[in-house]
Image (cartoon, rainbow, N blue to C red; front, top):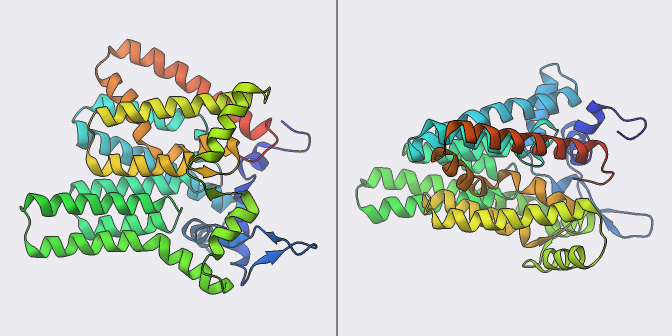
Length: 344
């Protein structure tokens, strides 16, 4: 662990500081610039629900730091329960649910679920949205999808997934007009959340592309259809970029193979739609390569082939494999937030 740091510091590092700053100070009213006049990062890059909950926790008596971790930890626990319920609902096998939870909670960079980051809240909302969709509670699904869209930009994938579920409902011609109206309303609600926040940022800074410009200026994040990821892969294979770069490349390769396997399993189309779009958003954008394992945490679809394989295997073999997986995943995450000196 770097000198002068602590476990608490590590759990509240990097983007956690931005979330807490938004919670305590609110959003800036315009672009921000450095002394040379160059556009810089600011809090408008971060969607509002998680910092809003941090502020709520503070109003209830917690420090901002404690509130950030409390929200994240509670959301992670809720996410685990909802993912189990979702897997059992989809596959009718408790063992698949347990395996999915283990895979989710111990994957490389699952440590982010314990940090002051928004991944755990986002996954809880997405899993809840899918469960509500399966129960045909469309307005609840739309509300949860909209909240997911106010948590992370990947919420756009959740909105599209809900729209696919509504399309399936209409195609089956087994629902009345009232249910179809509720379903369409829920889908619209979920679809509008991400563009609504991006439009609000544009209005606030006086530039429709303001949110995208802040992302690019602060983190180099821009969608380039995978060009930066491909360049990173080639550079890692041809130069000595260190073992972390190689591990990130390996994680991306394994995730890609898992995605293809998931597509062959013909998993429920809304979940597949969400997973494919979320995955494309990770590999298709430029940015810090060492952040990609964290960005893969909410994808979910790439975990299902292993969870389904666990459902077909002997319990003892599953226990051994998942234990080894957990030891590696938890060690990897611990290394990345204590020894690795760059943002995750």
